[in-house]
Amino acid sequence: MSLQVTVLLVVLLHNHIVSLASDPDPVKDFCIANTESAVDISSCKNSSTATVDDFVFSGIKSPGNFRETGFSGVSVNSNVFPGLNTLGMSFVRADFDVGGVNVPHFHPRATEIAFVLEGKVYSGFVDSNNRVYAKVIEKGEVMVFPRGLVHFQMNIGDKRATILGSFNSQNPGSQRIPTAIFGSGIEGELLEKAFGLSSKEISKLRKRFTPHT
Ligand SMILES: *[C@@H]1O[C@H](CO)[C@@H](O)[C@H](O)[C@H]1NC(C)=O
Image 1 (spheres, rainbow, N blue to C red):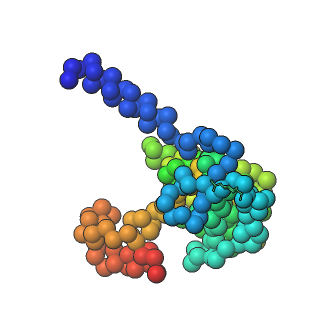
Image 2 (image 1 turned 180 degrees about the vertical axis):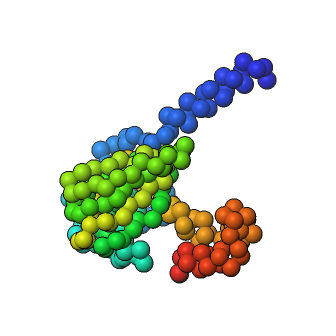
Image 3 (image 1 turned 60 degrees about the vertical axis):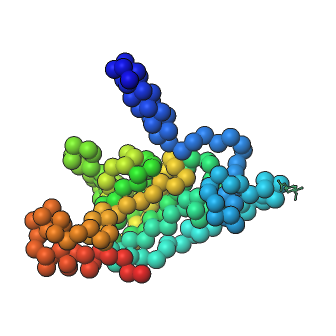
């Protein structure tokens, strides 16, 4: 293969990847995911049987279960709300006890914009040069977390805080850093070297962050 052809292929491939950098555009008004067929998200429920209730989700009237960190997050993505399928967006309700923390995490497939409904929240993200952008945001303010960047929040007010977030993907995904690193089964020796910690310290972290099933 000539050099020119190789370069052209690389450029085309790159453009192709860029053009797929968000959810695909819908090709019909809506496509309520057919939850009966576990096949894939391209399967739509027969649209003649759709009702208004397919477009309403009532599961975030109240907070979800709180984690040990004093944080509760309820994702409203296409898995729990099939009416969102193909529409390229989703939502989240997050509640914080006093002092509660949403641990550093990222969404591989979406930018998030978060609105403070109630409370005072130290909120921020880290860019790919490891620079942190963080401050306290209050009721009525929004903050944007660019796609794929690590971000975090902590309630620093004296009351419960609530945040509503929206995403430009029907299924943004979420990877919590402590769990991804210490709770996923990565070899202990690697973690000891990576973090300069003893095997005892790594065991403690693994115990703490391995999801209880
Ligand atoms: C969709 O539902 C309508 C009304 O029940 C029915 O007439 C039609 O045959 C269905 N279409 C398909 C593809 O199953």
